[in-house]
Length: 381
Image (tube, rainbow, N blue to C red; front, side, top):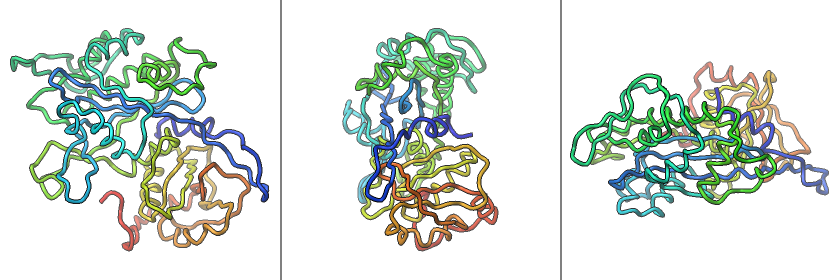
């Protein structure tokens, strides 16, 4: 299932049009979806968790997404491979934030890199929470001793324990062994919050927060959806010559999620001449959404907005356009996503060149497991 943010996008990311132009085209506004970075840092100045908060367009609540602290950073040709957390060595917050923004192709409106005291204060409104852990959480203390922070299984804990789980770092443990612990904390927060804590009223929800405290308060004032990016360990090789305990994100998944929960915070690839796409999926299936994003990225499009829309899907995938001059850039689309019907529309979202509504033909196309045309670059490679 896709995160609630995609479904929320259908209801609230787009609102009424700002008017019509000479061709009687209605332009829908994409509501502000601000993004914040919430990272945790232990007493050894190590980044122990990285989380991204995306607020709903015009309501309380939002989505919180975790990624490995040791995610592989995007580096320039000739640069030595590194993890985004390595940029924080010596407390260089600006380099660390730039690396995370570059990895996700987004811009943050607020940043919090918090230690134990600040995290305890941030989590204070949540109160006791039930957490489910798939393994014991251990932390290597200053004297080298191992302390068990929380044990395997389901238990109700105070927020201080949630904080300690995010900060825990066992020196002989790889990131893959502790990554699920972070999602367990976020899930515990989301489940405890439920439909939202009585911290803010709907009338104050439209103001864009600028600090991590306000971001988090607005997040937990409404329903909280949790997502965790999939990540693959990078083996020894050209991408990881040392080798490091380092993990590569799925670019297609990152694009899919960011374009659904935080479309106005996306910075884009920076490539000129790319057409911007809106993808609407009636399948409510992350596999389908991720696969069409992967193929459209390989075809050279910029994915600006992804939404889940009511089903069932129509038979044929539809390509909607306002300006026919952009169609030349989509003339080989069927090679990537199967049969497409092309139709003119008089309504589009701001900044969007083409809208794709996924049809049953795309699912049928995928059943044959077609290769992506070799004249393009697969974004996962």
